[in-house]
Length: 287
Image 1 (tube, one colour):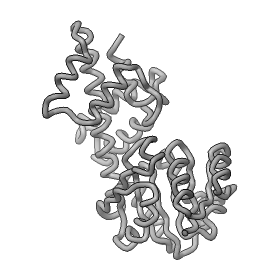
Image 2 (image 1 turned 60 degrees about the vertical axis):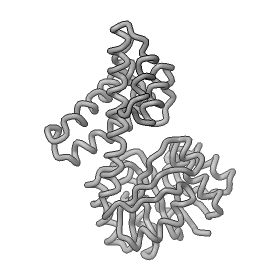
Image 3 (image 1 turned 45 degrees about the vertical axis):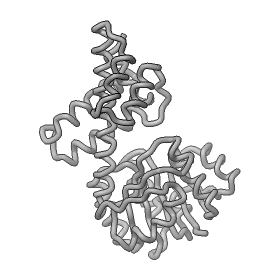
């Protein structure tokens, strides 16, 4: 049993914290809005008023927030940040999808205070978070990775150490880029097929029998043809990840396909689809 502070209780974070409680850990939670924390309190979590308060006395502090800016505030805010409340022998884990540059900067800030730090972004959406089947892409020193691994197992059985700090973020951005590019291409193909008068479902079923198909393409196609855009990985979040990927590449010219797909998601956001699932981009190409 470990004393864990879990900060950030969005759709993914709330499920991850719940699995830590189910595994028998003592969990203190914090979230900007009180609702998710109150729900976890019913399952045995303690609620903290600030990240700093949550981190006090915790052997491990985990964060799962939206972006670099939110991560910076949760960890480093001078008055309420978690790092100011952590013991020097504690372990810091950030599972947010962040830019490699910020992960490295955060790593330096944590090292200055003493705690060990790993980045541990995840692959998986709500069903995997709910069932504890997330895939971890961990960056950091081997010793810190070994400390984190038993705790991460409560939330996912596949835990990959991919390299030093920043590498986990980069691998996660690669993963999400492959996901998003497939979504934009399938959206365009569905529009192309429908405008040509073809049965898009039947046509793509035939494509699915070939070697070029992927498992996620099946899920994307079903959601797009059914008009099911319930948010699991919203347009706004995947567009953010594409921005981080382009920045990591150095420029749009260094990643032209990624930048082109980012612009598709940006257009979907401009048309009010930001909080819909990323598969909603099909609406840009269909009647």
